[in-house]
Image (tube, rainbow, N blue to C red):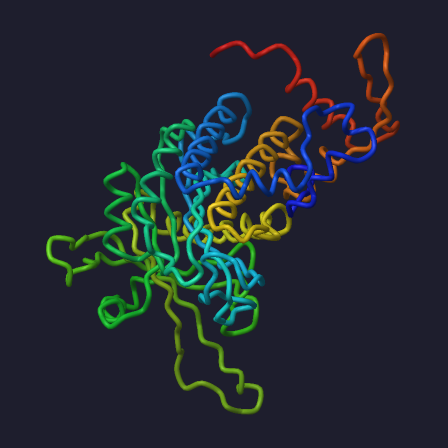
Length: 402
């Protein structure tokens, strides 16, 4: 997977050319398929635990999450992964967004949690594969508890904020985050109670903001670079006995531009569209609002995985595909660790870039004596320094304990 495999047949990547001289015990693709199909759900849970433990060790040995002692973010999101086989276990129709449109897609639902800091690219803390017709919030409370504990184990000892979309807006999710010792920041779906709270915000309470980088607005179909934000105290989940929760409701409003203005249909008064966030973040209004918008990077992780090992869910067996998802998370984290050891540029590069520049590197093999192999790399290679940094960090003497 680190080398670019996205299916069981790609096991042949390790069987061509001089690769068998470097790697021993390489099985055939059919052997890998049989091995994956032998997995039970208990084996999948064991593999997911291995993924979390590996992330902890990587964080100890590589500058994977700089700044984690001060503030870190835990992003929870789900993806409907399209599948085509008629015998895929668990495959069903579920909702997903493609180019801003909500569609029903037949597939499997992948739930993932990523850890990031303002200085670091996200790594995958936990994964879970679910049936295609599963709602995003199903099992999210136990999942986010597991992810928060994984984040703490990696050294995120400072402020930890769990961010999620409106599908995870529930008393169970926010309560689980609080009980695990983290803060939450969840997008709020518009309902009458939220609209009433927004209507109670005075005009003098709105603070203008200007985005340093414009944001694409799916409804207006244009780039938006300015908005206004305000906050109000809000009590959510009052319909659930004993689960009412009071925190901050941060609201961002954007002008709803009139597309007919050029034809003479000018507006009589401003019309606004509102985006609300329910959070107990300790940061200021402007900081908390900007931090929540960065939750979108969870989608970039899914895009990175879909462009690599998660391009397919290759087996008809549901546990086998769940194991494949866990292995994809492991490969993503290993690539992130390799990039952080190579250079600051590689530390935030996409997985496809790291595979091209650090992993899929051509070399000529030469033997010296009994069993000693030398790899001759290309001369004048533009990534030579980055690759040598990674090589020396990975094969040199262990670093001294702090």
